[in-house]
Length: 512
Ligand code: NOJ
Ligand code: CA
Image (cartoon, rainbow, N blue to C red; front, side):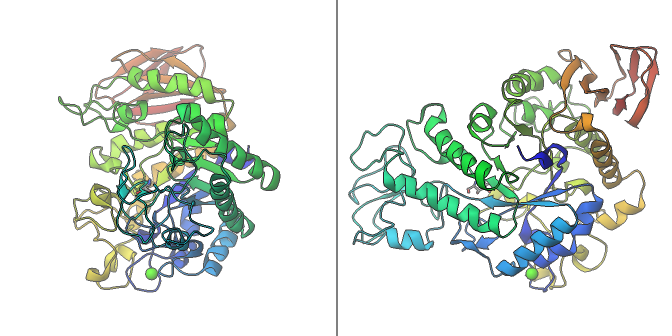
């Protein structure tokens, strides 16, 4: 386990929308370099950058045309190496985004694979043996290649599935995961990883990490075996490199080699009940929504078994949001967001802040861009200040990658820095607190002290600290295991009388 993850607080950057330095309206690597001091000042010491590789951008870069080349619109490979160096000078680690399940339909491997004559890449993707033969249940494309066959899609039409084999081979065109062609796909992905690790990157967020071996991959054991193999390579050659999975199943991901796994917003799971439980009829019952009348047990019943079963293997990552998820500001106000981030920054595991969430940027209702659809509203330009285009770019407004929040009160870094009680300054206090206390970091002990169905507050222990949170509009009280604790940090009003904790509506406390 790379030791640096223990105290890591990540900042996710969608490079298109962070900072444009050459006035073409699109964010770039130079812009990220320019803002590294800002990232540092926020208390984040690690970055995840969404795919920044050559791509036709039909899925915002998740359709990679060349894994080893920075997309010209973002800069050059040299710029990315400089970004690694500048980040490291500031003790910031950098994860790139690895997309192992598919490439762009314009990737050279695929252009070769489509050819009628057999070649090195013929089996790099999943193909049937006839253009008139479908691929049981999976989306596929036929009739586009000289090759007589259909190919499987892994996501959108632009993303053909790389071939890692099938858990159970039932058709003559399917291969077993240990077929040399499937091993070659895995080794090609290792080659991509080595390429960037040798240049100074610190690891990868792994896209759709569970999607490699197709059915029936029971319990994802064949996909897991590939990741175990890749983890062995990392342990031997790059022991400080981290891999973090888009999987949201820690039983499978962490036990198969991932250092951390995202707790994604899946309807009804524990994470979803905390802040985005608004798809069920009857209102928003998120625990962190002040009038949600939420239930912390819905979170704990899902989270605790996962945490207990996997804590010796790796970390579960709480996120404020990501580039696929509605921004939390969509449903929560600033005061609710402060408590939400306070919770995510004091729970176990490795937390992630999505750019702009630290100032409460809004989710915008805007037309789709680069395959974003409903996700586009979460991907708008960072609002730095009150100058032209909120400091994102000098281009004319119609040239911007996406529109900015048009509201009079669009949050900006500049405004929030001036206000000691702003969301941004609260985030900074919280990250500082986490860095100062080993008990708040990824692997420190976690124990539930008070959690009752439909009741507030939620109280838990991390090492020698006790944390209480009352996101509701009602006062709430709980008993502590001991007397004489002292408040070391609080949001809102909290009172301690001997061993009883009295929390006013919308409050948070850390006791020692
Ligand atoms: C998950 C990524 O987060 C998403 O943005 C992308 O569209 C799909 N995987 C396909 O790569
Ligand atoms: Ca630019």
